[in-house]
Length: 234
Image (cartoon, rainbow, N blue to C red; front, side, top):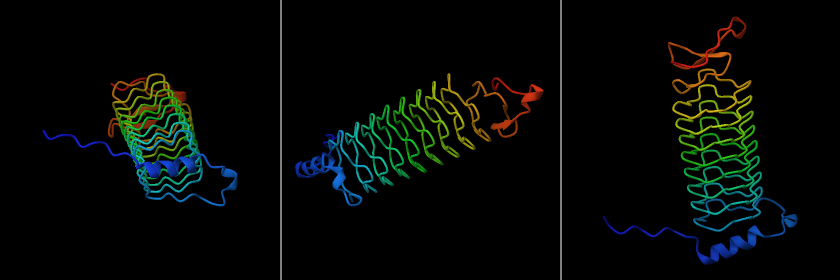
């Protein structure tokens, strides 16, 4: 095998400029900071103030964004592969079709964020807050969502196969047509969630009021009053 190519890093002048931007006095901002398509691979944006910034299609591969403020930012199509987003503030952000593969974001706050069509394969979002987030058709294959707060999240058509949802809060979440097979749902809460046509793991404990449809293999509502709920698919 040939020698591995060195990992790209942000140029020193670009890093210096981003440090200034990230530490600016935001009270003087007159509009969005436009950083669309900027290459910030490997940049250090720890604690940066980038709320409402336009980072559409930006390259943020391996970028350090721990504790950064990205509230209300436009991040559509941005590449966050292997980025560090621990405790980052991403409330109300637009991450439509963004690449978050293998991103590390424990404790990140994505409340009411839009992640439609985003790729979160292999991301680690332990204890992250995704309450009321829109994840329609998002790919979360193999995502670590241990104790994540997904209350009221919109996940119709989302792929959560082989994900770890141990202790996750999915109260009132919309999981219609979602694919959750081969995932760990130990202790996950699905109270008032819409699981219509969701594909659950074989032998998983099916939430009360739902059963596996023998024809499709997906969930369908049952008559709870008639004692028709199923505790596991066999």
